[in-house]
Length: 121
Image (cartoon, rainbow, N blue to C red; front, side):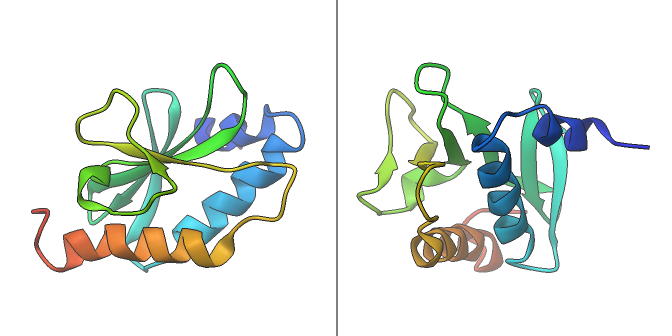
């Protein structure tokens, strides 16, 4: 039986479906303490029970993005603040190869905020 979270991915059309599934795998392989749940109707990735990122698609462009919960602590020009005070997003073009090294670097720095105690768990 499929979980609601699995249905989130399976109901997406290509190329977003493949892109989101690839991002899901990349996020989950970052650390043994990273798990997936669903919050606000979207995939939420937690580190030791504390949310650190979400996957979503932009309502206007329909492009996938990773929303970094503690984005204000991350300094990457690729991360967009928009009108958010705390969170930042990393947009992904589903029609291009994923920037794997950049994604790994952003995720590592985000998780290090929790591992190093900057963000309390």
